[in-house]
Length: 483
Image (cartoon, rainbow, N blue to C red; front, side):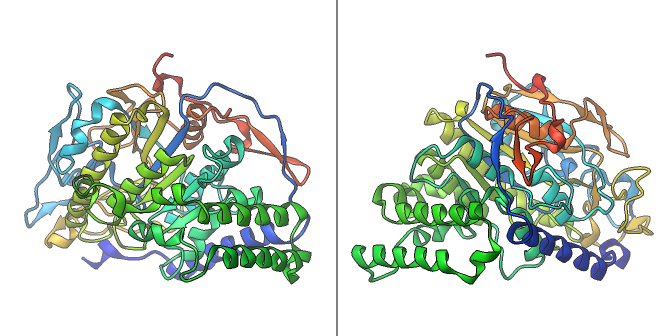
């Protein structure tokens, strides 16, 4: 039974991804200066002013969440080929639409959502979490000759802050130090060539967010301001200065100035303090770090943040990375995400913010009990499955990385309500069989909702760089309600 949890070529994988991260850093710091100039920016009407990405890091299995299939309860001797879903399905607030048992609160708000059941991903040569997460967040397949910006950085650059003090791009719930594949995560959790001022404010622990916007303890305002001026001088005269373009240096200084303004603002800093939330509302979100992250996201968007990502956190073989004990792990994750997602949608709606806030629930790929990638895939690093029957509960669940059919949920931001787009097959292989949506199309749809043309480009080192790969992404117009 050990084949179910076997790791593919771990050392080769680590070496490749570390080279990717190093290449990204080199492209940002060295070589020719990266001069970004705004050109080819086509203005389109925005349906949304803010975006919240709820990132199910590690590979959320669509058959266990938003696209349930034939249910096979656990029993010793269960044939693996029968294991399509390990949870039964439940009805939702949309007639005829069912999602996985374990998500009863989300089921109640699906009448506010567009559910894409036919998102598909390429195998990228290797079906690896970090490659697919990089691809999803930037729109580009690694490695690239320049450091590609995260989606949130594009929005921060092209749309600017909604509030002059509030950071435009905030990343909640993901540690970038002390966890597996931290260098690979850093490779896409960045503004890339756009410059430091458009990068994320990282808040790995939402309950500690208030501390991150407090001046150093015991330091009065005057001394704090003096230290900020000294720090700017150090950056300007740093030995790293000769390795950094003028554009990047000025961007770093502007990011320091914005941080100083935030730390000096009592009003905006309160948005980071979860202790100020009424206790009864706090309790609705208090299911763990992800739940508290959803509450923080709502408070930050309410205070003027442009793009907020909240993640269940990617750590290899934890959370959605269900290589063993898949059913039990997903049952726990259902409890962690169900109430907070529903509470976020209802709170935004109650505050009149949902129509102008695009909320996305997504993951790097789906999962299957048998198939790695998709039928006919030639991607490397595929696990070999040799077991025909389940004999232990820890092997009951969906373990394989599956790119042939993935679910994405979108709320607000001009998308249709109670709408289902596309479909996957009812029997294995569970590939998209109607209206597939590529990542470029999905990104184009998200950017279109935010008022950014998918053809938008900036000039980098004398050549165009687009928000969707080669500027070819086209929005799926059927996702949107008529204006």
